[in-house]
Image (tube, rainbow, N blue to C red; front, top):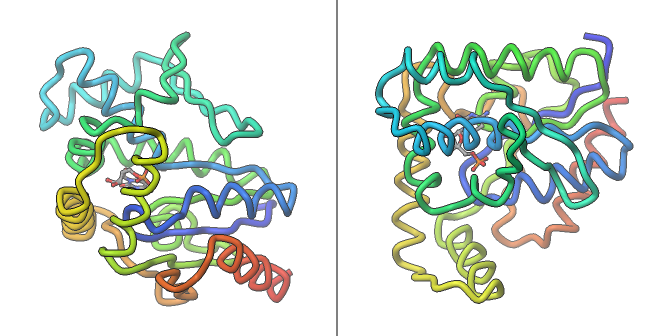
Amino acid sequence: STGFNVAIDGPAGAGKSSVAKKVAEQLGFLYIDTGAMYRALTYAAIQEKIALDNEQQLVQLLKENSLELTPTEFGTTVYWNDSNITADIRSNDVNKHVSLVSSHKDVRLLMVEKQQQLAHAKNAVLDGRDIGTYVLPNADVKVFLTASVEERAKRRHLEQLEKGQPSDLKVLEKDIAKRDELDSTRSFAPLKQAEDAQIVDSTQMTIDEVIQTILALVKEHS
Ligand code: C5P
């Protein structure tokens, strides 16, 4: 690998994407949102009415279409062929089904190949579940970003309310805990802290404190 790579893994709703995006911005690195890739395939499969446990059809869908992530000042724009599906991939329906889609080994192998190609050539920050353990085992900096389920659900809840969308805190807690369980118990490349990852528990931290903590780790390692 020729680039400097920062891996940020952790459970759902820990703030990985906001943090990773800002860290990348500060460093002038590319930001790669790997969750968006699994979300995009999930969204497309739902649209195409593909059974989400049909691994080979999912693989075929991914191979026969183009999935592009374009970095913008607001985050990442996601294109499925010519459609901009950036907003669609954040729906509740996608939240509910993405863990099943991402549990398939052959789906993951294709995604991982794309992620490695993007990261190897460049200085990049990647966020996901298996970046430090599987995608980039030699990443220069590895962070495992976590927070209590209650705190993660509360943050999502406030986000929803701010957007004027209906939200039920208890339902969010249940959904988040369920997704974590599915992601950490799948057999291939599950969500897991890498042995050499630095744990950052953001339960009592602001986003800015988390960003500064990670930037300090990068400085130490460069
Ligand atoms: O990070 P985000 O919540 O957008 O990820 C959505 C889902 O995609 C996760 O719950 C997980 O099932 C899957 N995922 C994964 N491996 C990654 C990134 C995301 O399995 N590296």
